Length: 214
Image 1: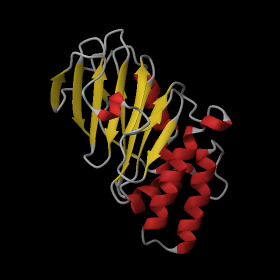
Image 2: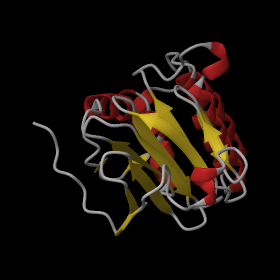
Image 3: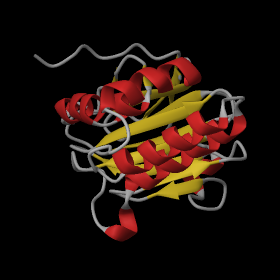
Image 4: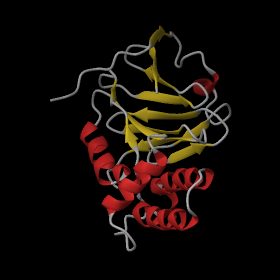
């Protein structure tokens, strides 16, 4: 059964091709741009944009400790894809920056950094079990790094469940409720604003700009 559509914080209508926002009008200039199968991390509150979603799903990660954030355009359950598009490396980078920013025993930090690198390369951890890594990260991160998926009408929301269960949960990510938008059979785009902690979704079918609080 498909989940119910998520009620947005705010709904605005637009009449042109894109909403009247610089992130949508000048992608790559006013925001970081994420192509299909790619991911980008913002370390300076810069907005992140991705377009052309249909069956693909979006993933937003937010680190409340460092302020770093990331946006993923997921088209496959395996986030490794090929070498140049390794979305798992963005997850690894985000987690490494977090562990280096907190007060933690150095041996524990080194062990977690090593294990996270293995997990992000889809390798079986050699120095601790996944369950132990999950518990340690949950203790040290304590919900400060959160994940939220966004899916449209024709999106494969089952992929979101698998990506979290098989990957993100093993590195201590806290999962927020799924955002489901009424996109019909049309494409949609997304902008994440880390400074405001808001997700903006533009839907081609209804010419709506939907705002969700991360």
